[in-house]
Length: 201
Image (tube, rainbow, N blue to C red; front, side):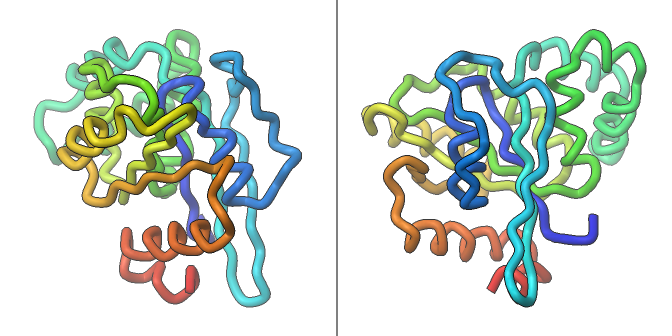
């Protein structure tokens, strides 16, 4: 990819589209309370005078357990994992059997960084670990965003779990965050890769 890009990924209905809309300053992005509204990865570019970045709104994980099982069959060691994800995205049968996961992982195999979004108002569950494990297999730089959609009752529990998988974890409510918080988040993005610091600045 010719520019810095981020794929906003996670479970269905956790506010991914809202985060993309806020960070891209694009109010035309459809946001729905109905789970599974996003079925294809969509790209939104943010242009500045000297630079810019790209955000991908992606479908939610639907069958992560079966996807991880497929990946484990096709990679015997850690050095083979990233290629197994590429093979998964390009496999014709996977495109039929796991369309949401294929769309979700497409931007990642092309070089996009990971912004994993969870709902801090809902309890943490072990089922999310399968999703996070799949994301680890891509080898891409990553950050977790806790979106407290209704309240912050479970933010601490989520934070404790997410730090096991992500070096950077932030709480970010796209519906309430002021512009200064957007800038703070972009500064955090710049730490994911050294060469991103200058263009994001």
